[in-house]
Length: 123
Image (cartoon, rainbow, N blue to C red; front, top):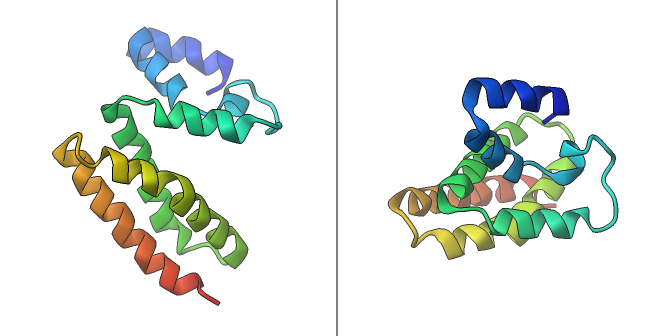
């Protein structure tokens, strides 16, 4: 989220929505800078601390990205994405699935898509 966009978001969608969006956005993107040491760890803590409704949005975004991944000709990129899903997002989804029926459904969808794509990128 660019700083100039934040003002418009607050005006049109409210401060509460904008704060929630900031919580789901990586710090290096908010600060418009390249990734730095510690960003990955901070990102993981930030995502793990999201409330269940925001976590559902993150999972939906990840699911959408996962479905688009099939269009990528870069096999290494696909493997990195799946590794991130396996190492980070799936464990959070596993832990969160009992919080709501929506998170349980998203857990099932993420695992199904992961399994499908994992078959495609195996050497």
